[in-house]
Length: 410
Image 1 (cartoon, helix red, strand yellow):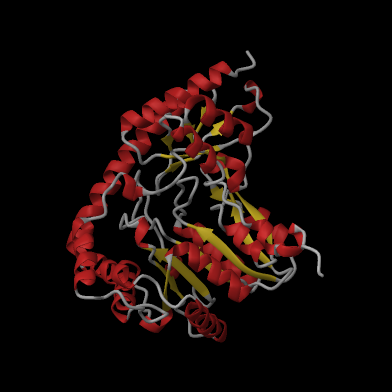
Image 2: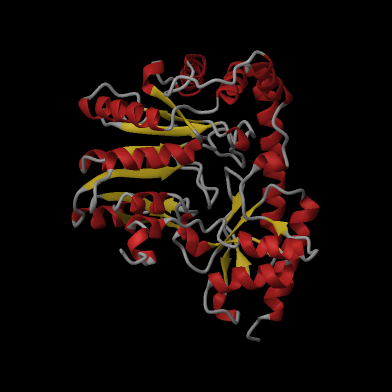
């Protein structure tokens, strides 16, 4: 009789890379809540908790259900939704894309996984800047690839260090793609057009597919102007990732888009493989696809809702930034997009080994749930989601300051 297999024999090697810094302490939160404590949750970027999904989108979802649109849709997405996405990109960024260039995914998260699955072989490399969205590196490593890391420079307002990355790429091997997130999670920075041009040239020089995660594209403020990669990436294969979660405040709908506009051989191959991969999970949510199509096509209602949301987010971000920068123990660069703060901790003044210890003890002692900066690739920082009302944010920052004073070395 065959003996029972040990854990290492049962589990795949790639499964060890499945980790989410954003969710790693959810079990602690649930235990605290079960004991009757109220936890201030500033770890998850979910606008739908604070900004209700616009009613006209909800109505479209309900209508789809009432009309029996509960079956599988086309694996690559409803043609109506792909048409809407194509029109949106044309209207906002003058991108002339066909619906066959667009694959509907279950959020941008699935699009990231699908993209890595079709591009990355064992020991291939993906290029990304730190700090990065926490799914980027695990998704790459899950496909047995490795990351080549460049840096966003905090001293220059989180601008990308192009020359520093170029030096690393000279020694890079089997490099497949370069991914950027603009506006950026976790820093809230928005790239200037000139910087995007440099990144596009860098990708061209090294034969990399350029991937641009633009999920926060309409949430910009403090004088920022968003530029889509499609406006500057000429003559190279690129992929745009976007979706309904943030701009349409519809996180639970799980609708994302992967757009591959090029007609070169690499782009055509990417589109073909993405279509094939999409069949493995059958389809995205059919009623959600109908609802998001309405959300995009009803330009008037969308403009009203996204403008109101962005104005309020800017107010909350700016107030929270001011409070943080009045602190003795942390400082943040003022964001210009998305809805995150990424303060740097003065660890020399605090009795903690690292930001992981800081984050966990803060949760247990002050019931404030944030995310450690090392989960985004940059130590001695924390990420704070600034979507909550101002009084909630003010109270949370006050608790963080109290916590810092309690654990100060002086």
